[in-house]
Image (cartoon, rainbow, N blue to C red; front, side, top):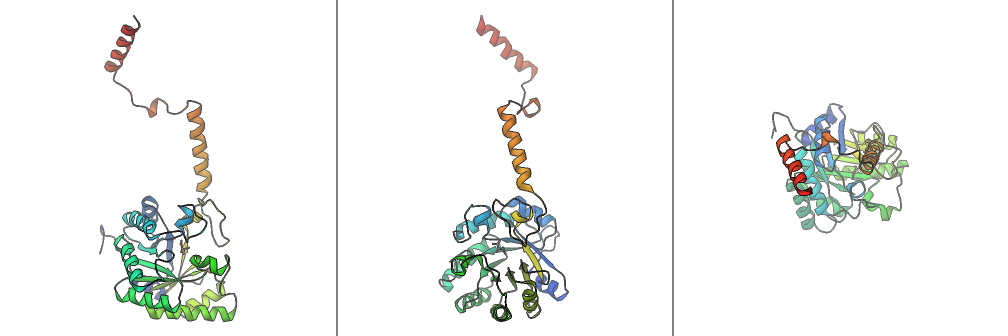
Length: 289
Ligand code: KIV
């Protein structure tokens, strides 16, 4: 449905863009104002990534993020968006337990304002869950390559699909995801040639992060792009601004101004009318006599 004469991006738009060789742009957002600015800049899709576990909640990985966390941020982001397609991550173990739990949790994110959910992995169990979701009217995005929710079993931040055999296995998984009904697949930390091979052999678009230029689209974590993230930034990030430094400079100057009595000044203060001020002065004189 059109909001204020703006034609929203849908899953069909994703496929059309892939078929027309147009790149899909996607960014993460976790709050209302950032989502609004991203949308106003014409980005096609906003992802409420469970990367918010690190960027917003200060955890070391994404595995502590809960469905309740995702609901809160999904509500905030979706209120800020008019055009972009909103995707919410299904956090660790909000799926992978039973089809019933998966559909209940996905449903909560859809009711919070997401147009689709994203699920990491492609085990037979997950493929069944994805089929159930898509048959129930819930749009699903897959996520292959490096899958951060499996960090403990992967054993570190390793590039995936580094050999022909591993790339073929990734493509097989991607095809199974496609058959299960996903309308796009995020490919994370995969060599450019492998991502190209996978992307060219799929019908649905791939959205790359650290997967080179041949994917159907690109996604980045907004905190990495604007230079706000507190931790180390991966090689695949292009940092377009240094918000961390801008924030720290402004906060330090404020701190100094408060300590030196240079803030607030007259222009930041509310003043009484002349008449009321005179009453204070009169009463002060009376009190002192
Ligand atoms: O959680 C996230 O932000 C993601 C992107 C990195 C794709 O899954």
